[in-house]
Each structure stands twice: as C-alpha cells, then as structure tokens.
View 1: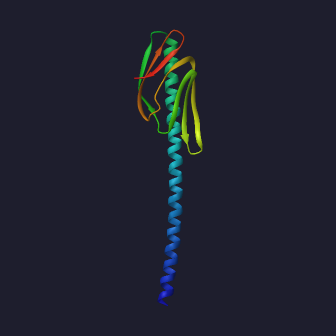
View 2 (view 1 turned 180 degrees about the vertical axis):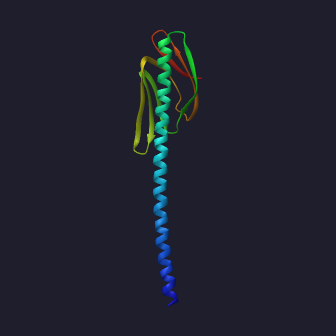
View 3 (view 1 turned 180 degrees about the horizontal axis):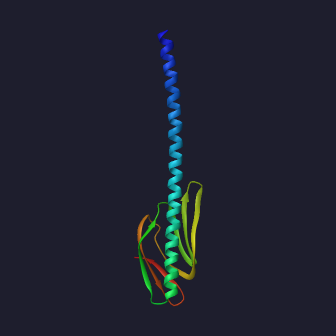
Length: 135
C-alpha cells in the first residue's frame, strides 16, 4: 500500500514538473518575440529620427547642421545603408533578415556604423544632398 501511494505521488509530481516546463518554454518564447519586436521598433525609430532631421536640415539649406545626440542602434543590426533618399537598416530576426527603412525628401549620403549602442549623428546640408555621419 505504501509503494502505491509513493508511486501516485511520483506521478503527480511528474505531471506538475511537465506542466511547469511547458509554461517556462512558452514564457521564453514570448520573451524572445518581445525582444525582437523591441529591436524592430528601435530600428524604425532611429531611421525615422535620422530622416526627419535630414528633411529639416535640407529645408533650411546649406550650411545648416544638426547633431542628434542619442540615436540608439539596437542589437542585431547587420548593416546600415544611407543612399539616395533612403536610410536602410537590415535587422536580424528569428526568421532571417528584415529591412527597416525610412525615405527622405532629400538626397542622402553618409554612413553610420551598425554596432549596438547610442550614437551621435551629425546631419549637414550640402549643395544638392544631406550628409549623415557618425561623430
């Protein structure tokens, strides 16, 4: 009789452990998805902040210059391309690489490193384009 009760306790304990493991796996999956969404949102915010400032600088013309002091480049950015009227960030996500971009009214040139962190970005109006550089 004692061995049957011990076996029943062992079965209940095993079922509880299995349920806890399933819940932990689900929580980890949700956490990873949220981190990915935050990375994408940060990349969108950074590209739009750069383009919006470039539009302002372009409207005011040469020699206008503004420096953004807190452009956050998130983890997982594979590359940042500034060319034509577009700022393009390629961001690594679970399904591969996704393109995040913002389009300017002005022609853009320049470069920003893709390392994670807060960047200082100088945006300067030139004759026929806006120059974007990391300082």
